[in-house]
Length: 153
Image (cartoon, rainbow, N blue to C red):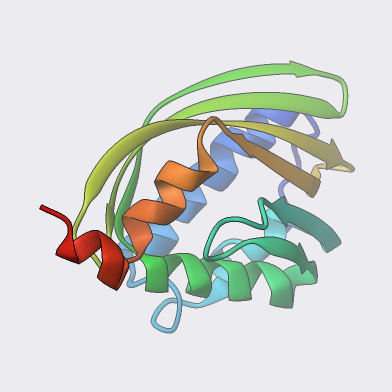
């Protein structure tokens, strides 16, 4: 696949999310080649995830992005982006995404918004910073209750 020719941030993001859907439909991490997504990310891309999440931390480069998608697939049985709104000026875009997800470990379903700031340079995503309204609720849905919580009436 060739590098996207569009330099418009919203166009790049729209195409990336379509490629992500194709990647996931083809089996996602471990099944589908990351080559479906790689052209949309700069080789030195940086993704900052909230440390409180099971896939938290800083993910760097294509290898980091591939690792992130693998970590996400291990945490979430489903992760559907129900609705998205884009606002972009120059190299910076803001994406509000409404998510409906089901955690693998607990089977819990939840819906939540994510607001991301995304930098697009030379037609590729170079930085992603997602912001969550309630990381504790999201992380809590991904792990079973503690023994003390299970014993409460």
